[in-house]
Image (cartoon, rainbow, N blue to C red; front, top):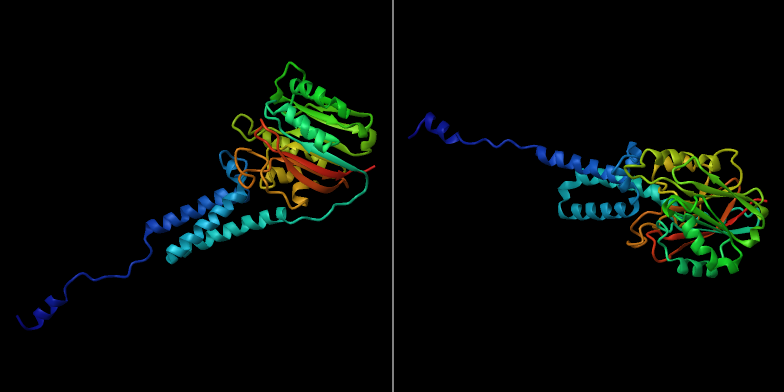
Length: 337
């Protein structure tokens, strides 16, 4: 057939209109960015005190590494995914900037007074190998030892094994209470006539020692509530109470123990404002002290020595004892006379 109608017939057919990004791809990209933000920077979103999000922020460092590696691989495989990759990398950059100061040593702190070697180890409900712990104390000879989850039963087992070192020791709880509820402190003979006082207005009673060669410095042995469903309400309040030792006018102090938090938690940053974290000052603020079942690069540094009021830091080490899910921290600080 010829003529105008034939030409019109030949032109009929599907007209292809350029299509925009698929809606599903856009939604997926938004979800990926939101999940990465939730994992890496929940404190910036005000969600770091919410379960189960708090578990993510406690492992921010390894999570950041994993995210960066995955998005770079994704970009190499599909360059067109860049609209999702770019915001994810920006979020990761925020996380890296937050973590970096903990890897850069500040140098020796002020040296106003005598050296004081301080150690803390959560003994996991009294299950740490008491003989191995005694051996470590004989080897390192710390002046102050703080043992969270060591009530009177654990203290009574440890004391005879270190009697030759001249330690005096106290527990924050009586023998009738479980080890998990208490904290014990050992004070070396070089400190002289120190006294111990119980801090009772917390979930697991703490201990503060003072006097003797400590001068005006007041070390306090701490074990805060943990961010688990039954204690999530008490957890930020106990972190906030650390301002008694770190806040303005608190005086020379060393906050020592298991704080069940890292500097990635906003409540921790507020409660410890005014104190210096010994791990961060030494450029070792990321090696994990919990759990011991994973390598030191995978986990959280929950165990801390914080100093304030002019107390300096010079030396930081992570130590291990069998039988507990925590590693310990050993730090040299300079007291204030």
